[in-house]
Amino acid sequence: MDESKIKKFWEARGQKIQDLPFESLANLEEDPNNLELKIKDEQSKVFSWLDPYDKSILDLGAGIGQWAFRFHDRGAKKVDAVECSKSFVDIGRAGAVSRNASSIEFFHSDAQSYNINEKYDIIFVSGLFVYLTDDNAKQLLRNLSNSLTSTGKVVVRDGTAVVNAYELNNVYSEHLDAHYSATYRTPERYKELFSNFGFQCLRNENMFAEGHPLNKYPETRLHLFEFVETGSVGN
Image (tube, rainbow, N blue to C red; front, top):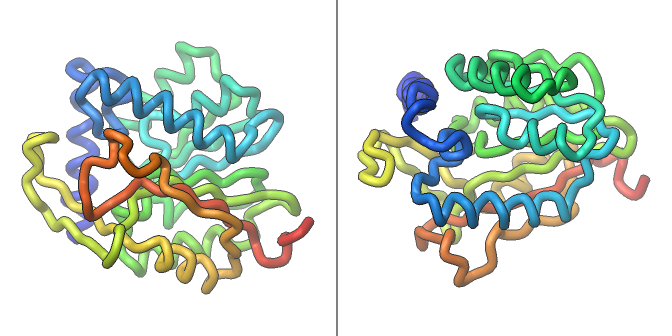
């Protein structure tokens, strides 16, 4: 995948702030009915896995802050939101001001290059790994090592391949009216990558049950993972 084209795609999405609903910019769902269903069902699933109340959270691949604002609204102590798209960061910062969400801070950086200098209760990685090469994914995981509190966890929300690794390389999407690139790894590959950097997968499930209308493509599924550092298992 060409990283420059991926960044160009996301910068262009941010320019559509006047044309698309706020939530649609980052999650790529432009059908209003599907968008409403996606927001509702994803929140139900994610917040059954994590409780942000009084937690410090690192949000990697934060987009326009859609999850950061949800964490804030549910009582997160602080949210550090890291996003590589400058247009998205600008939108997120403006949103934080309008919501008086002073506990959210946005950082303009590639996730894999972001200098993590504290420990978090929750590291939330959303829709990010599909846009990372293996080398960048490994760099990110190396940075995540030793960045959790003793009871902390990493929650990953990302696209996965159903059977074999599946890649879209600068393919034109009629749905998005743009060229799009992404790499879909299998859930087993995610677990292997994390294991290589000292993390254990406690659970992983598809975001939506089979037959759900948002399982649009036979090759891929949106997936949810929960990881802990090996030394914190059972704590």
